[in-house]
Length: 111
Image (cartoon, rainbow, N blue to C red; front, side, top):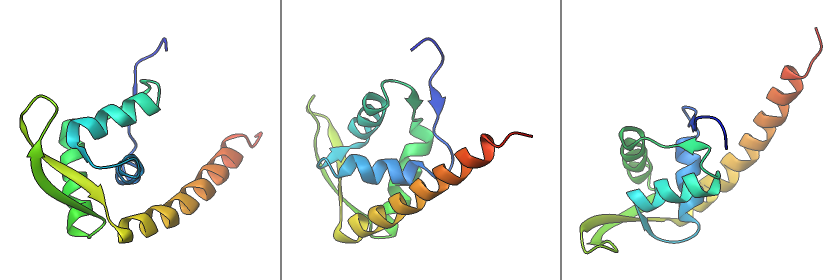
């Protein structure tokens, strides 16, 4: 890796959480671990950002949560993506891909 992990840009965490939950029901720590592993350790998700994101997504009806026991027998909230969340993810992914292309084009423009 060689450099410090990048912080997740504001506005992308909700998208990353929805993507993580397409793999199945997870608790908060498992979501953070999935994002970190998927990014080969190059993205860092802070607790202070993750839990407000989970709350926002739940309020919007994009995820659901229920209490259960984690792998180490601790009480934890487990989150799963809803049908509305899958639709929102598809729409946001399309927008994200377009955004990345446009920003890359602007950044590579020779002055």
